Image (cartoon, rainbow, N blue to C red; front, side, top):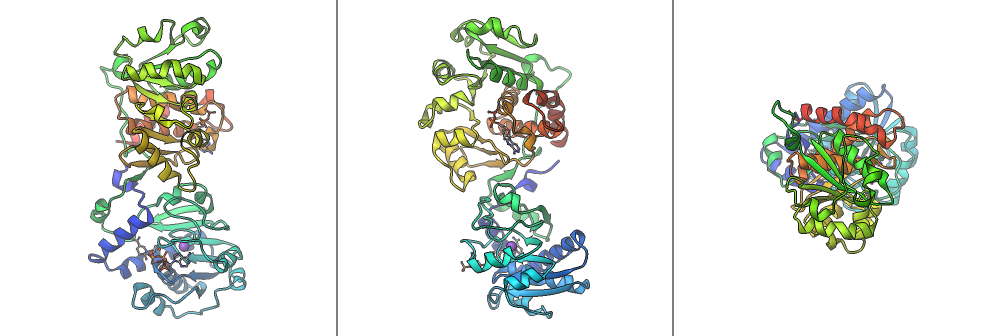
Length: 474
Ligand SMILES: NC(=O)C1=CN([C@@H]2O[C@H](COP(=O)(O)OP(=O)(O)OC[C@H]3O[C@@H](n4cnc5c(N)ncnc54)[C@H](OP(=O)(O)O)[C@@H]3O)[C@@H](O)[C@H]2O)[C@@H](O)CC1
Ligand SMILES: Nc1ncnc2c1ncn2[C@@H]1O[C@H](COP(=O)(O)OP(=O)(O)O)[C@@H](O)[C@H]1O
Ligand SMILES: [K+]
């Protein structure tokens, strides 16, 4: 099992905090030596010997570059170094630069174009503004790029692009991945991302004030089936269905059932006869919602898939008055467009980027920060869906999910997810844990679904996906 601490995603500034604390225990020069050696090792494993140019910036990222250059040269590679600016005098990077005895060439596009591989050690965690046009031109001339820690021009905190960029084919980072390694658009410019151990004491990592994690089993635990399980301990999930879009509610109900709910009931009102033609294991209620809410065992409700905004207006306030645990999606998010405070009291909202924008305005280049702010504003868990789904809690915690497949990008997939999350909450997980687990299990089902699945295909993989989450979380 991955320990929560192994899943931490410190931001560049949190890494700075870590470096400062570490300095009194392990000299930065030793960490830098380990980092540069790890880069050289990764490059040697990745490519056959060739002409390498190392682009070194003035900070410690550049320092890692000088060390990597030395180790590659010692391994017999043809290496040159180009310095953007001299390293800060007296620092560990200056020490590393002094140990470089090989050729130094101008920091130019023609030198970059001559090399078979360019190692980008211009800026890493200290990157605080867009790179100059000169840097962009030099990087653009490279045929193949391997980035040290982070590709110059990608914001390590947000994954935002700070300039036009060529893509790297590999990025070697240290200690832990950073949010920018998982968040788009930056992620698609980083190639394969490798995280090297450089001897940073684990006890120090536990002390940093980081509230961002990679979403993997170990961050949460999914309840198992036991010999004494019965349908109510596995959990009851209820949904509200509407008149015009029955498919969405059915997909959500199917997702809830397939991911292990003990009982799934759909409140269909006047549409009950039509829903009764559906799968026999789905219980369809025709009674008024007020009557259904008298059953206290029906705690968890999914509201929104398949509902118009008018229909949401009829049912969501009743669910909240009855203090139910509500997962609000689709129509419920449209109902609150521009007035997100209408959703106060729901447990979780699951917007895609368009729905998020209609609720809170454009998130800008920092979606992680925007999701956190929205969660804080509403006091609900926000699941901002996409290829890098972000789960943010009102207390500042956030998880980034990289465990997914573009196969999930098919209509109705989000409805399935709302059902899976409903099941996790009905099984007794906290809202944050249940949303994170639901997103991972949905991602795992997508990964297992083969080529070009449709939303209905995910259901047959959700049970195995939940089992995988249980086993990997042990
Ligand atoms: N985490 C770890 O455990 C370890 C980390 N290590 C390595 O250290 C790296 C972080 O090093 P770092 O703090 O010196 O920052 P780095 O990225 O080299 O930037 C240097 C300076 O450049 C400047 N600057 C920034 N952007 C600019 C721009 N666009 N255009 C022009 N200038 C710009 C800015 O200075 P300013 O000009 O603002 O004063 C900034 O301070 C990290 O990525 C990893 O590789 C390992 O060595 C050891 C263990
Ligand atoms: N490129 C992608 N890679 C991984 N997951 C994706 C990708 N695109 C979409 N998804 C996932 O697919 C689901 C789509 O949900 P949503 O946008 O609500 O679609 P719908 O409303 O059609 O059901 C979300 O869980 C999202 O995270
Ligand atoms: K870099």
